Image 1: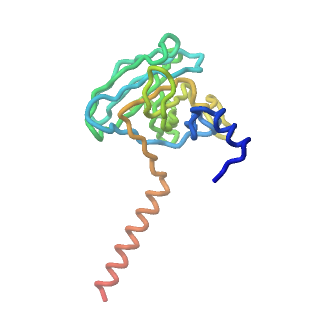
Image 2: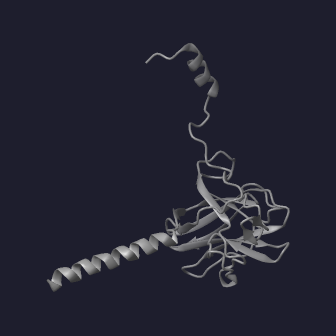
Image 3: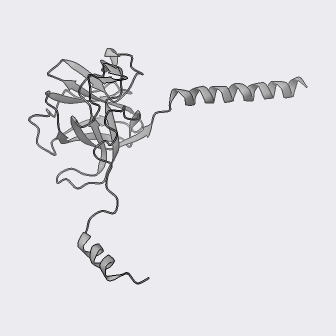
Length: 211
């Protein structure tokens, strides 16, 4: 198909611009980001690269392999780390991973795992909400490979309606992770429906055999 001259000029002017942009930053500011499960894609190392920060508080990140119990020391200070600085954790394929923000300024911890608003200090989440937004990252920043972008919120959510405490912009501390697979966490209603379906199926089988 022949293109109009103006359309052709526009395409040439665009040069090597990507056809699809990564979903960075988080678009739904003020709303909790969808919960994600993070797992190690392959046996080896998971590496976090410092991407950017917009936080006034001083923060560091901790990588926690919840399956093995191993974790890194707090690192990649958001006020002193150079873009592309990294920290790694050895993992086994399929290990469950949690990413933790250590807010040095307030002494609080927040993580990539939500607990429906119930504080869980034992799991490094002092307000119980999800503090991580993730999306694929295709590259573009020198020194940082493609991987999974994780933007983290470093302030506590003290109320949702109206939102208080945090602004939920998920851009306070931002990292690119390699060797990580992110998948949506099923909503509680999904488990209820699944359980209801199993009960219904069991009842149908029982009626069949009773007859």
